[in-house]
Structures are given as structure tokens and as C-alpha cells.
Length: 156
View 1 (cartoon, one colour):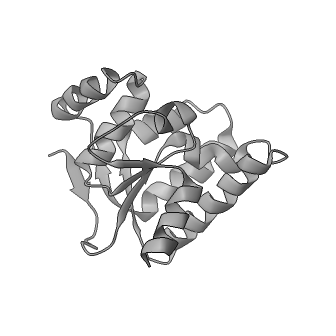
View 2: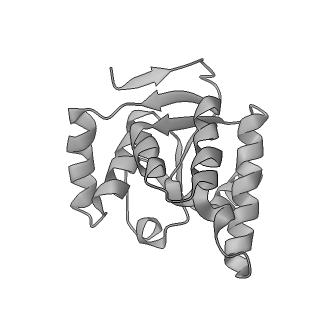
View 3: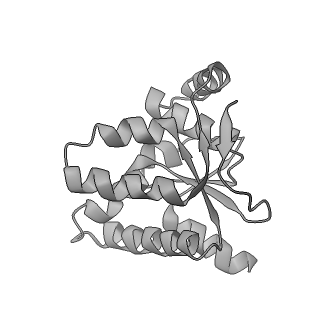
């Protein structure tokens, strides 16, 4: 099985945040864009805690987070797995889908993240990585935290 759902909130919007998004609050906040993206990401996390949207997690998030040299960051980020409604396990199908995304110029790890988000039936892939945001991905909405909140306000 590719996706393990821990509990079911089928009616809630599903989001997948990549490792760059989780790390944004730890970045240098003197840059106004970084600070705004941090505030937006923290608002998204609060929406997850308040069960307004649901979070999808993956093996690749665990893998990438475990490589983080900063213990405090690793621990803070790994706590989010406990709030996820589902976890996507790496499979041959995900690897194959990731290869398709690599064909449009994504790096391997980024491609696997997006494939996990798609297989987890996420509605949005949230990132602050400009190299990902500038790619055209047809299977999922790739968006930064600020534009995600803006879209929610406009749709709501």
C-alpha cells in the first residue's frame, strides 16, 4: 500500500509541505520575503492544528529531515508527522512518477516529494523553493505559503 491514512477527514483540503517550507521559520528573518513566508507557513500550520485543513506526510520528509544537522530543527519538524492524516510510503509507482517530474527539470528529491504529494491525494504542494515554484506541474497545485493563503481568502 502506498498511502496509510491515520484518520479520515475526507472533506478537508489536503496539503503537503516540503522540507523547505518546514525549515522557513529557521531561516534568516531579516529578509522581508522570508519573514512573510514564515508567517504564512505558521498560519497554515495553525490551520492544520485547528483541523481546518489536513496534512499529508511522507517517507521522503522523514529521510530529508533526518539529514538536518540541527537537532532542534529535526525534532520540531518531525513533530508534524503526528498531526498528519496520512503518510505516503515510497513505492515503485512513486519513483516512476518522480522520474516524470525530473523530465521537466526537477531535482530528484523534489520530484519524489511531489510524487508523494500526488499519491497522497494532496490538493496543494506548498514550498518556498523557487526552483520548484517555477516548474509547470500538471498533477497538483504547486504554491508558496503566501499565495496559498491568498487563494483560500479569495475562494472563501
